[in-house]
Structure formats: C-alpha cells, structure tokens
Length: 202
Image (tube, rainbow, N blue to C red; front, side):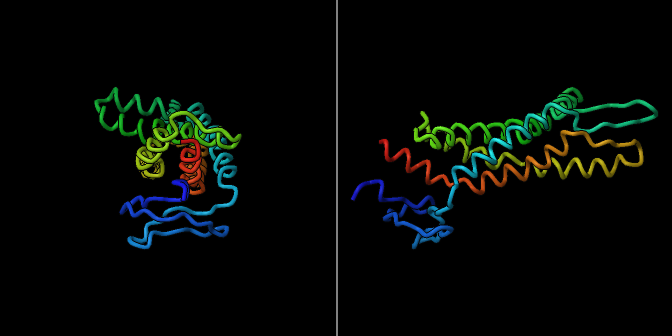
C-alpha cells in the first residue's frame, strides 16, 4: 500500500485507508466522526471561478466609495481604507487594526491563497510551498469576519438615518456580494485535493 492511500484524521490522528467515494459523499473518521474528505465534483473549477469573481469584487469594494453622508449640504464619501484610517486618526488604533485585518487583509490573503493553490493544480502542476499556503489559508479563515463588519455598518446606518442622508456606494454592494462569494469559495474548496497533489509529488 502506498502512503497516498492513507489519510490521518485531522482531529484524532487515526490513520486509515482512503477509499473512493461516490459524487457528493463524504468520508468520516470512525473514531471521532470528523469529516476526512469529500468527493465534490468539479471542486477545483468551481472554487477557482468563485475566487476569480471574489478578486473582482474585492477590487471594486476597495476602490469605489462605500458610503456617502450628506449633512447640511456637505457630502462626505468614505471607502474601506479611509474608514480604517479615520478610526486610527481618532484614537482607536486597535479597532482600526481589527477592521483592517477582518475586512481587507484576511479576505485578500484568502483569495490570493486560493488562486495560488488552484491555478497551478488546474493546469496539472504543484505550486511551490503548497503546505505552507494551505496552513496559512486555514489559520486566516477565522479572521475573515466581513459579515460582522457589515452588520456593524447596518447598525450605524440605522443610528445615523435621522442625522444625515445616507447614500449607499458601489463598494457596499460589491462587499455584500463578496461575503457570499468568498463563503461559497471556501465551502466548495476541497483541501484534500491539494494535499493529495502534494503527496503524489513527495
């Protein structure tokens, strides 16, 4: 038996034989019940499509105005970056750093990481430092909390509605769609395919 035919449980480290699965099925650890891998048809192509769409949406969300506030005839436009900078300039550096990480840095790393892994695999190649990138993707996933940020924006809009006229910018719609697209990309991504590629070349 080759080592490519074996897989260790991510939760309890039980070593077991990999078996072929029908489309849509998943293999679970008999000891702890942890999902080991799934058979998702066209996982690479579907995740790559989501990642490419996510890159376009990410660029739009960070380029165009996010919100515009009109108070007594004065219009103030803000972007994700300028909003983070305003938090820092007004004495909230920790909040600014948290917003920067969760809304810009973590999503950017996820999208770039997915493209770095998936594009070479799509063309039958193994990217360099694949294991490092895969671990980075896994570790940064909890920090991409864009939906929490969006919820905070909606709460702020409700509070400001009586004080100013709020105009939703192009970026906020792109950001909202990006949340869905990035979630779909991470959901359709099957990490086991990448690890198999690494094992086959080791």
